Amino acid sequence: MLYVRGAWLYGVAMARGLVHFVSLLLPTLLMGMSLPFLVRGMVRSASSAARTIGLLYGINTLAQQ
Image (cartoon, rainbow, N blue to C red; front, side, top):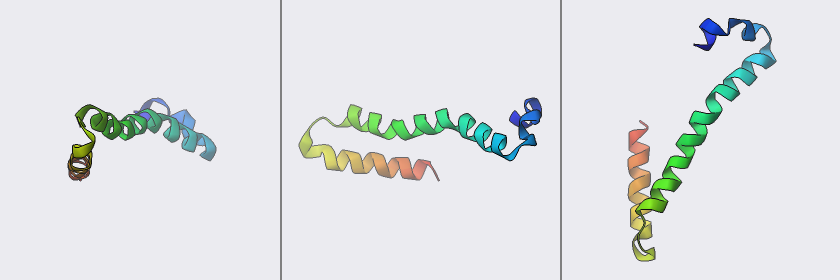
């Protein structure tokens, strides 16, 4: 979409980098926050925290591939 509607932004190299950075900032931030929020919601006790976090981390890693 940026290439079609904002082609004028790609004339300067610095503008290209800034456009890509800004357009990817929100999705990257939200993806990075998902695992800590899942952990916060899923861990019920300190004794089961390691197992739950490991399971969630493993699922998250497999889902990204």
